[in-house]
Every structure is written in structure tokens, then in C-alpha cells.
Image (cartoon, rainbow, N blue to C red; front, side):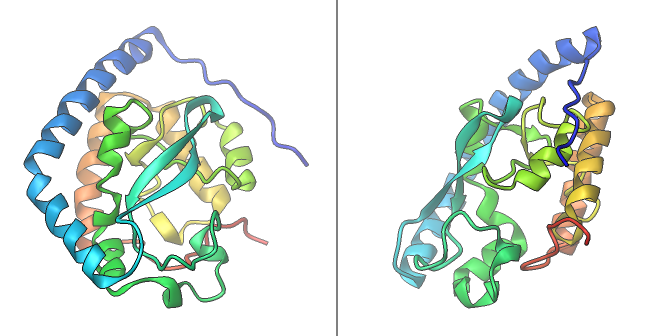
Amino acid sequence: MKGIKKMRQFTMSQKLYMGVKRIIDILLSAMALILLSWLFLILCIAIKIDSRGPILFKQKRVGIHKTHFMIYKFRTMRIDTPKDMPTHMLADPEQYITRVGKFLRKSSLDELPQIINILMGKMSIVGPRPALWNQYDLIEERDKYGANDVMPGLTGWAQINGRDELEIDVKAKLDGEYVKKFGFIMDLKCFFGTITAVLSHKGVVEGGTGEMHK
């Protein structure tokens, strides 16, 4: 059964915050690219030495209002990994992950190139994580909460409340909570909650549930 599309109606203050949020995204992402350039260089060299293939991994994802864009990540898997398939759907995801890739995924450093997506205006620092173009179950669930009508983010409310451990319906509901409470305070909670989640590796499960509970 198809989900019900719910258009999120934002308040005037929330609409004004969207403009402020974009300015913050530009300033912080530009600053991060400059300050972390040395780390980018080290990781690029490590990836290239560790395995064959490109340094960056590009994949079609769902952006605001269900538009599509190419997301950037540091490559963590071998080049023979099935394309456009969520990690949880691989029979044995561990066999495809490279040695450097394991470190990058556990530390979330593989997400750093998404700073470029933020600077380009395709993503925000905080927002629902962008779904794969073919994750129709997640996209449909998010429609119920209007969670496809905000800019996807590098981190979000679902990421600090379960991450890979969450099933699709729970993840979408948490994304809906973020949209409902959309604002500066909610973004601050997500931002600082992310620091704690990353340091503790909270919710990181290779091939984690990521699907509707049967």
C-alpha cells in the first residue's frame, strides 16, 4: 500500500531559519575544507595505497523534494562491490570492505567529502540522511512525515538515536520528529549529539537492519 504524502507546512520563523541555515552551512563547510585539507590528503594517499580504484565514491541519492544528486564519500569498498545496493542487502558486506575502509567507516571519516555536497547546496550539515535513489521503502515512509521536504544532512536526529541499528519505519519517524521541531535548537542537539555518537561508535552495524520490520 502506498504511503500518504504529507507536505510539511513550515512556520514563518522556520522559513527564515532555512536562509540562515544555508549561510551557516556555507561558512562552516568552507572553513572545514580549509582546516581539514591535511587530513583529506592523508586519507587520499591511504585509500590509493590500500586498494585499486578511485579515491572518491559517487552514488545517486535523494535530495530535497525527492530530487536526485550525486553524493561523495571516500571509497571504503572494493571496486567489484554490487552497485546501488544498500550495505544491509549484501550477503556478506564485510568481504567487500577494504582495510582502510573499515577504519573510515568506524570513525565516520568516509563521510568527510560530503562537505563538498554541503558547499554545493545539495546537502546541509544537519538533516535526514539522504536515501539511496532506490530505497523506495524509506522514501515512502518519509513522505508520511514530510521528511523529504527538507535538505538532507551529513548528520541528523536518526543518526544520534540508533543509526544503522534502526529499522526503516523507526528511522523515518525520527526524521519526522526532526522536521516537526525544525530549528536552530534542534540542529544544535543533532550537531553535539553526533560528536558523542561518533566517538562512541554508537549504532554502527555493518549491514545493520535498515529495512522494514517484517
